[in-house]
Image 1 (tube, rainbow, N blue to C red):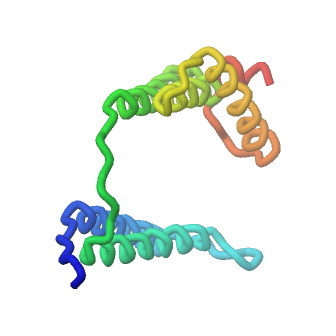
Image 2: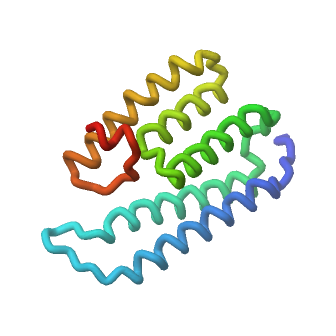
Length: 155
């Protein structure tokens, strides 16, 4: 006889939040007044994202009702605080004019430290290289506006 599994309340809450987020994406997309000039327009990606969120919400809800979600792991607060610190650093550096490259390098180093890597200086340099490549791709090649700082002005 199969063991009866309990309803996973946290899984249902997450499923509900995913469905609410999907509804918000669809609602926001419906308010776009831009038309497609050549085939696929600006509404295509919100449809993909909203559909994906709705699918994940329904699937998560089914698993929560069946009790099929995996057991939760313990929370590593140090890792969470490192990631949040990196996000705060990103926001503060951009607000203070540090620019995209420097702010993203700080975030990269903090996240890599959160995953257990302890070579902060090396990770910061790797983050600088990756952020510079992303900046060149988006700002120069695609002509998108990214926050500028002292490093971006050198490029």
